[in-house]
Length: 213
Image (tube, one colour):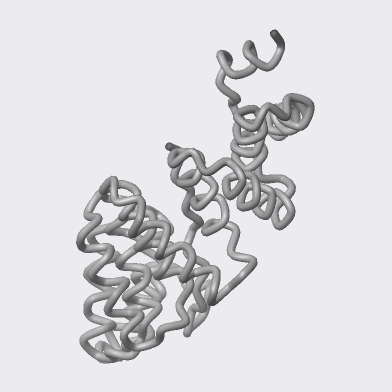
C-alpha cells in the first residue's frame, strides 16, 4: 500500500527568511522566545536535521504549551522516523488542545496504516475530512485503504476526489486506474494510467501489461 503524506505547511510565527545562523543569533539575545525556538526547529527541519529540530520544538512547547504547530511538526518528524506510537501520541495531544487540526488526523491515520490498523486509520482520515473536506492526503489514503479492503466503490470515490482536487497528482491517477481496473472499467483505467505516466509517476509494468492485454 502506498501511503501519502504532505509536507507540513504551518504558519511560521516569525520571519520565513531567517537562516539558522540568524535565528541562533536572535536566540542568544532572547533565549526565552518560544516563537524563535519554533522557527529554528522549522529551519532545522528544512535541512533534515531532525534531532535538532525536535529539540527546538520541545523547548518551544515548554515555553509556550499552546504552540500546537510545534507539536504537529514533532508528530510529523516522528512519523518520518518510524516512531508511529510517538506520532499518534503527539497528534492526540494537539487535538486535545484544538480538535480541528486536520494535519494531526492525517498523521494519526498514516501512523495507523503503518501499524496495520486499517480500521483506526480509516476513522482518523474520515475525521480529517469532517474538518477539511478537500484534504487531498486524507482522500488518497482512504482510497488506498479501500483498495486494500476490497471496497472498490469507495476507492474510486476517494481517488476521484484526490484527482479532482489535485489533477497533477500522479499517484492519485495511478490508484484510480487500479480501482477502475478492479471494477472492470478498463477504458477509464487506461486513461488514468496514461495520465499517471504523463505526470511522471512510475506505473507498475505488470499493471500496464494487464491493461494492454
